[in-house]
Image (cartoon, rainbow, N blue to C red; front, side):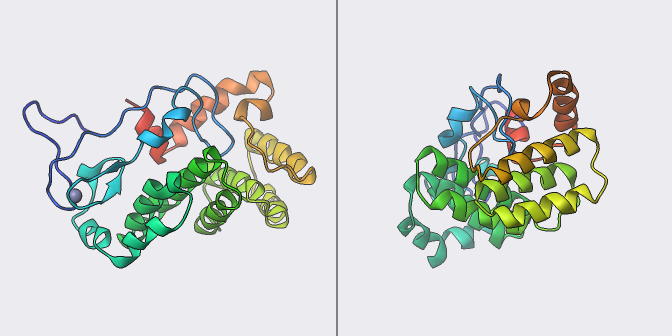
Length: 232
Ligand SMILES: [Zn+2]
């Protein structure tokens, strides 16, 4: 994200109306979850990550970065109908996901839906977290990216899709994971066997000496939304 030049206010990429600059989350001081939800203090700022354009209703972390084609999405019946599905805390993320889907940004759509699942977790929703994670897992199906593959494994487990998670762990194990990936896969297998759908920190899955290499590898490899958000 670029700093706006002094004196110029950011404008919505969809409609050209004035908007606020993107939210800047504080850097995480605690390890992320296995699905890369950042630790505190960034974690609890989730509700501030998405901004809503007051003029056209488009939703995104950075409204100025939206393509002009987002305007038609924000005006569509499907976009308006999203308000009827619960829980309300997930709505900004589901709006952004729909814009990503309709404008052809599938990787960001998956990140938006996973963030919607986090919002649903925080709202203690009953079925929505699993439903949203099932959508994310479908979007990440067949990925050859190691980090996305590991996150997909966590998403499947936390959705309660234990058979699919086990099969995906097998698939990843057969494609030459490095030592760190193999350690995380083994950790997930014990949780899958225990039918555990809870959140776990990456640090709890790795022996202490492995923390630093994994974190640095992750920082290099992660191109997801949250790392861009937290890079400030
Ligand atoms: Zn707008």
